[in-house]
Length: 227
Image 1 (cartoon, rainbow, N blue to C red):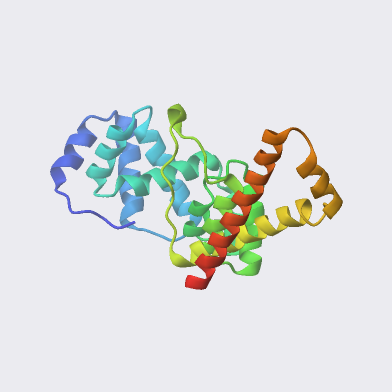
Image 2: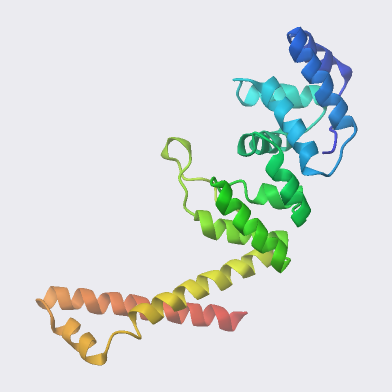
């Protein structure tokens, strides 16, 4: 967790505003950050102390804490998520034995259920997924159109090229499954009946849907040819 350039003034000012117990926690946190380790338990210890010092404060409180420690707020925020997802560190020991890294675990934080999170981490460890593939699988699992606070759409996540390829493969598989379920299980006579059913506007609507599907398939084929 790299340091950012800072003077002692922010640290002294922040620490002075803490209670005696909080000052002890702050000193413990600073000592941990000055002796960084890679194990999940180390991140958990950091996260527990960051959570305590942040308290009920919002982004500004976290930003002030990060500034006092000479760290980036986003990095501290991830440790808070770890502490919330894992109030106790017991499960983390098992994940470490599986070879799960901090980067791997962070990629799965969007998955709220621990059982689902551990299932995908187990699969990733057994099949030796790259972190890009793990991110793509997590995105597929939680969905790409989640709604944020207040009903606002979340910002679209960006992927590196490898993650993008994995997502294209997943979407292609999903389309083929839908095709097998809908198209191949419907006979020609069923399609003819569908096109004759209802009044003229309804038949035109059905033909319009088919034309739209054909147009999009042609665009997919053209996109593949360009690659």
